[in-house]
Image (cartoon, rainbow, N blue to C red; front, side):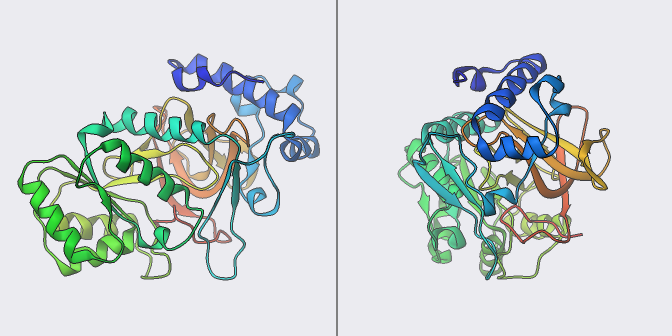
Length: 326
């Protein structure tokens, strides 16, 4: 068993690389689905010397297989929203404390202490179904904020607008996190001039509106809320960690998560920084499922580790992280 303590205490690129290789070998030995995938590629730990050598499991495996360490049981199962008629992804999580530690410390890494925020959540499409990892995360952050005004707003946009304006006028530090279509609904009903509020979209129109490119979406939201930047969250059912953007669609990650770009014509090959390709994510918090995921997102990764999401592969389902269509 790999000690999980070092995962959230990574302090250097070398430490990340060493732990990623250790977790790869551990999952190769203990995750039957991942082991079968590696065997099909003739990839053995003896041939894997850097992260670039590690096979990334296609994210569709979470739709068709139970991606979990042998001998472990799921404490809970998170499922993706998907589209009508599509097969949802299922992430079987054997230790919820790993997810909780990851999203709490990931939020703190990017935004500071959660206790300094009042969190207003506008996530109707997520609250209307079971199994949402995003709802679980936001519910926990709301509780940890300990702010009496923190909470979910399902369809009561008038109450949310009133609360948002009042808190901002009082100089309270507010995080408004919402699914894109609901944030657009809100600014079509009310006009804001916020000075102390972080507006964060989680992406996705969920079939409620026409998809927009990020620039158009953010331009509308900036004008409607009267803010200079729109923040974004990059997360998905199959991951236990999140990336965050504080504007312009440039995402950063916590130290235990990293993005890479793969060649769109050769999915087994990582490519140079700055080139557009499929996004591969290393999420070391996924120690009990699979830490090496080939997503269906298209993006670019910079040398400093930041990344952009610029679209999705044509065959990909519309998912919660699909906020940009080419």
